[in-house]
Image (cartoon, rainbow, N blue to C red; front, side, top):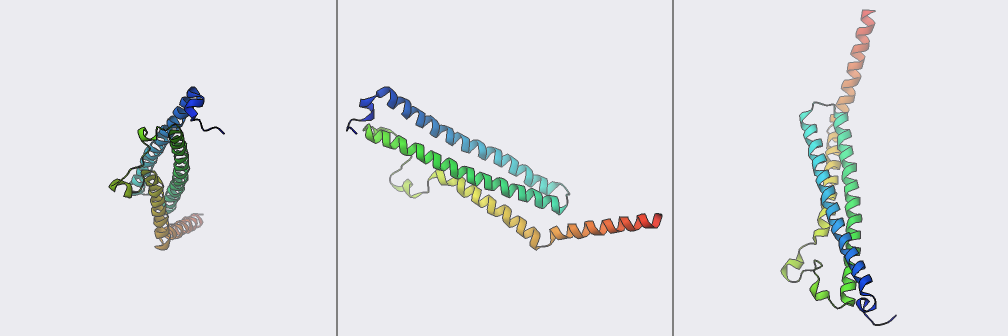
Length: 170
């Protein structure tokens, strides 16, 4: 392999690959925000539905189970997108170092006091981990407090009463 920079080898190819990596990084960031927006709307709707509708506990637990799975999908998606974003940024960084222009490209690698804060890339996985844990906690709480079993017992009691009335009317 030669010691020439990629720009010296083929500037058009270098520019195309560099541009493609930046476009991909922007797309990944937009995709994370779009999924977060959709997740927030669905989550708010389900939580509002749980509070406003007088549904059976079985339906409430089913909705909580759905939100747990949806949060888990969000977690896995955010981890995948985080990995893809880091890959794009690593390639961009490698290209800028080889082209000796890294001092002119901002890749989110802060120096000084702000560098002690967690990278924003971890915010999404942390958020989805917390919401998954929160929904699991709500399910366990409902099951432990017996609210889900009361519905089953109540439904069985109602079925027995209806069956008894049907027998009496015959």
